[in-house]
Image 1 (cartoon, rainbow, N blue to C red):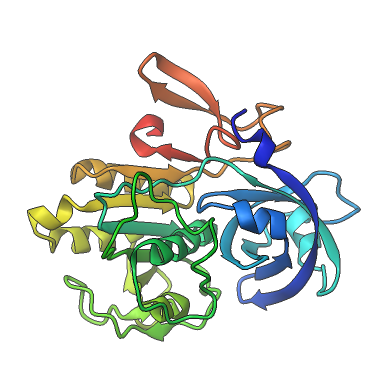
Image 2: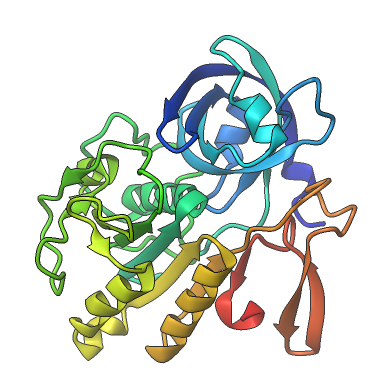
Length: 310
């Protein structure tokens, strides 16, 4: 297990715990060791309550100094108990766990696609890309000295122009606002954006089938196709796709990337027990040069090349 020596268990103090519509919460904790080593795509294994022995995996959404943010939705007993935890309490967190996203130096137009609880890794990746390759940071949430805010391999990417597409069938866990950043090839009226990304100067658009004002009425892949079709051949050569979300969405993203011959990395969501590779309860089939192999999502992933798993 390659990252065993970089996984820590910390008693993290809850700094804030904010509820949003649709049983969604943003949890912010003080967790210095995990914050210093987290990478976009990493997750943490959280003890939700003393009443529940089994931990729950949560993707890391953002890091600021010693603080780590998580976005989660109540989907079972564990997250229901976690939602009851209050500011000032201490919770046990194990992490950071998992292989992160990697961005090549040739990727100037990263396309980030997040759906539902797959949104957090895309926010963290956007934060890292901003710190790695763009100037003019306009947010106190950014700390460019953080060593974790660099996922770029070989050398820093300069003049990055990320585009983030987020989809949700429940209200978004932030106050949606009209974007001031022009994105070519957007359908008329598709202007809804995430305020935090706007502050960072990163273009974003939102999709939903619920008729939310300013959102694209359709799937994330449909909007991504609009954007890709509006790029020149040279511009598309600078695109790589990064995605996290429900399995059917990731399959569609993988097909879209294949259609446009684009590199694509996906972060898989699987049920986990130990989250450190011991129980092998989260294995998936992965195509390798030697053939099909069984890989553990928790430590061999959760990020994989899309062509290896779809």
